[in-house]
Length: 130
Image (cartoon, rainbow, N blue to C red; front, side):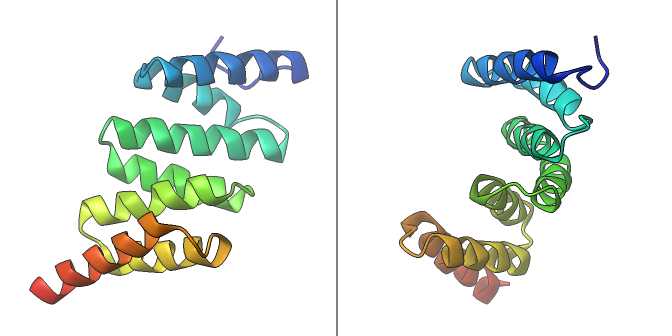
């Protein structure tokens, strides 16, 4: 199937298959499966679907789609992993102001996140060079 999960059991199976595809670095398959979850009736499943789709899109270097999916995931209640993908995707597209904003939001939730702190410094350097 390609539509949203019909019930909780199917949603669970789709999520398991999506995680398996992601672990195997099969990004296209992972994105398709997570895309199905993003159309689920349950908000928490939609959040997982959009977050997974964002990760897969980022890995496929489809950064605009990664940004869009991350933003939708966050609206559906996803957490710091979706925020990190969003920040990284903005950094990769050269939107350093947006990247800094999202890395700072990440630090509010995870104050000891060294990667986010380092990325803020890198983004600030890139902005100074512009």
